[in-house]
Image 1 (cartoon, rainbow, N blue to C red):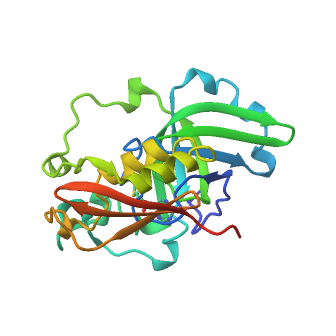
Image 2: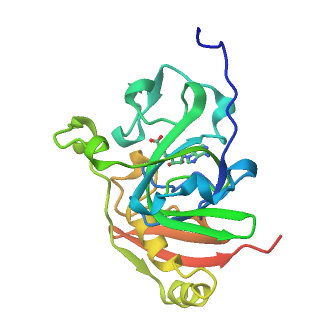
Length: 241
Ligand code: SAH
C-alpha cells in the first residue's frame, strides 16, 4: 500500500498551561517548571489508555503548533538563539514554522487524574501555549531516547542567559497576594524572566529603557533590565472575562 497523499490527525487532548502568548515561553521544555494539564478528548478520555504510565518519569508530547500553522513554512528560518539574522535550515532547527507544524517536547509526568468522565494527564516543564492540541503522548524511555555522546555544537556555543531576578517592594507584595490563586507564580516568574526573554539583539544591553510585559496565567507582569538584573516592576491581574 502506498502512503496516502494526505492523512487526517485529530488531537487526543488539549493542554492548559500558564502561557497565554508566545512571548517569553521557554525555547525548549524543562527550562522552567511550568505545569500543564492535558485534558483528554472524546474516546481518549479513557484511563485504560494510560495503564502503566506511572512507570515513566517523563513523556514525549507530540503537538500541533496551532498558533503559527497558518503561516506555512520556509526552507531557511531565523535562529533566535544565534541572534541577529543568522539562518538555519528548517530541518536543522526546532522552529515552529515547519511542514506539518508538529512540535515535540519531553516533559515530566506528574500523574493521571480521573474525575468521572474527565481524564487529565498532569505534566511539568512545558514549553507549550495554553490551548495547544496534543496529537500523541508516548513514554520517554531513557535506554533508547537518551543518547550519551550526542553533540550540539551550535547551541552549546550560545548558552541561554541567566540573570538575577529582583522584585520591587510593590511587585513582591502583589505576587504574594497572587500566590493564593496561582501557587507557582513566584518561582515561574523567576524561571521565565531569568532567561531574559528579550529579542536576542537586545541581550547585550545591561540597561534597557524599554519596559517589557509578559502574561502568565491571567497576570500581566511588567519588567525591565536594570544594571544587568531583571527587575520585576508589577504584577497586575487581567480583568476577568
Ligand atoms: N519543544 C518543541 C518546541 C520548540 S519551539 C519542539 O522542539 O518541537 C518552542 C516555542 O514554541 C515556544 O517558545 C513557543 O513560542 C512556541 N509554541 C508553543 N506552543 C505553540 C503553539 N501551540 N503554536 C505555535 N507556537 C507554539
